[in-house]
Image 1: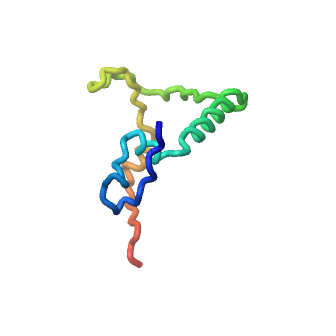
Image 2: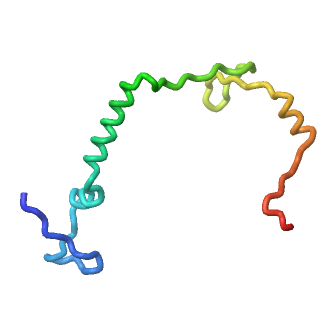
Image 3: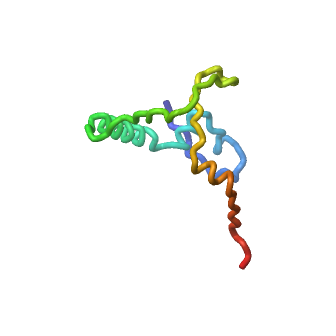
Length: 102
């Protein structure tokens, strides 16, 4: 496959000397170092999988609450009961004004 001629600056009109690039040329020009980055990411992922200090995320147990059916999704969800701290904020609301003129 012959190499395409070097592209000229974008401010010149398309012509035989400045051809319109095809999709493959355009994508190759956008990201010339993609293969090297992908290889580095794959190596990092392989090293991370072999590292015994990395543990998988584990979900925390649900707090006490009521299990109900979500009317939109139809799935069972747990609704947590409102705590005393929340009720204090409801009984004594406060307003914070940011960027208040001095």
